Length: 371
Image (cartoon, rainbow, N blue to C red):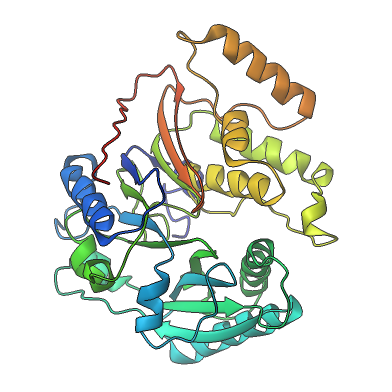
């Protein structure tokens, strides 16, 4: 969305509904996908709609890569963990799509990877409103693998996505603003869009296939606060599903920009990954950018989230002081302050729920042996 009139993308905020379901024993099933969709549908009141009631602000689900389902689609992927699957939003212009996919293939080759397949994601847009349908992207899945070595692919998939994003953003392609990589990972896959909570399962028929299985489901229903909904700003993002507004987002973005010259994780080698925060996105997307950077740089998921989101003030003052001291000692950015906030994050191996700010955002957990 371009800055037009009084609209300014810097003020994109979210106040949404988020849910996280996991099988603590790691058992994958389609039942957990179904449960996740039910949780999402029960949060329909947490999402929002515009003047067009069939165009939702956004809804999505993060799952583990459904390996067996992918094989059933006739895609010759290698064993689990040896390849990455990604969801990509592409422009409707055929020539631009082909050029973008060619850029992905070329960048993959430079990282010792190969683009082994591109899949047209089945969608059903009959229930979409005119607003959502007018900006609906072409959605494809890409499958990237290293078939010649045993080196881990996770970091290279991250480097691939960042390289492609920078290359397309700096290109002269007329439809470059319609390009967005929803997720690219060897562990998780994100299905999302400018949908309502009730539309997600019907828009993506994949989600109702009995062989589409997972042991983790992170769902999100978006309420776009005083701003415009778009397909890329639907959640979950690549790691984060966030409920709340970040009150200090402009300060956080500037602090992160100022520290980019100091952040050079060994895992990334000599590659320039600046800017770390993608421009023109929401507050939640910026937090996701930084969280992903820290995790891919070698930090554990719980550690990174604890550094970025402050603990509840009233309930844990001592822990908050210790956490702040740790952040100061490590020279990282200041807290993402949010009076009301609840975050769920996942990377396919671990899942974390954290309440930030003053702990006033309703959030509860329950363990159920059934899933």
